[in-house]
Amino acid sequence: MAGRKIKVGSRDSKLAVAQSQLVMAQIAKAHPELELELITMKTTGDLILDKRLDKIGGKGLFVKELDKALMEGTIDISVHSLKDLPMEIPAELPLVAFSKRENPLDVLVYPKDVSEPDRTLPLGTSSLRRELQVREVYPEWAVESIRGNLQTRLSKLDSGQYGAILLAHAGISRLGLEERISRVFTADEIIPPAGQGIIAVQGRAGEDYTFLEGVNDREAEICAKAERAFVTWLDGGCSSPIGAFAEISGEDILIRGLYYREETETCHRGRIAGKTAQAEQLAVELAKQLKDGK
Ligand SMILES: NCc1[nH]cc(CCC(=O)O)c1CC(=O)O
Image (tube, rainbow, N blue to C red):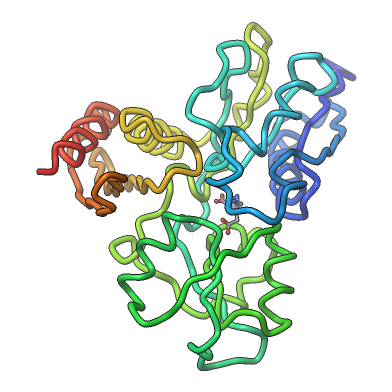
């Protein structure tokens, strides 16, 4: 493999680039003989900034352009936030590694130098999953959509348009902005979405990806597959209001799920525990229980 060059595809946001560099550093550590090149591109989700994600419609808003580049060979792997990936992954472009999970929880961020948020200003989030759950935490606080990448959202917050905004802990941590976190929601207050905090590496079927062995984390892979099995069974896309969060302790796994029934506009939460070897079956069992309204 000496001298082989690996072209790594990524969205061009600061977070996407930071995540790609993390994966590249892990590859370089195990395989110093490989030459790595980062290739960034804008995706549909980066370009349409005036709509809530579930209203733009279509799946894979953040991946289409990268899938095409991967298929055509312009890049050899693409690096994604797992939670932005659609549930149906084309067989030609399998997920080949899952990074060790960062903090998977959602957090509240106040404007800079604010210690008590102004609740007459809206609470910003672009996710219906976060909106539905945060309404139960703060019933009096009006929620308003906020779009754009993490940097854009933080600057909208700091310019005084919002009382506070909701974000993923993992994204803020990876940008080194942890001091901006004002409150961390528990997994019972706000159940995270499938895959939050996990970076996924996508490749082309039939290629040799053994150079990714230092990137993959077995526990993250089990959680990722269980959480995605839950969402897949409920037939939700990547921006559906569904929460799925698995935690592993030794051989044991605990899965929390949130299902939103559109006809009745009601949230259904539940949890299931068992062995990691049955992770995906447990996730599907929980999905069935919630859908049946038990
Ligand atoms: N939808 C954008 C996005 N995609 C991944 C993350 C955070 C990192 C992660 O979940 O791994 C974020 C920002 C956010 O939701 O606050």
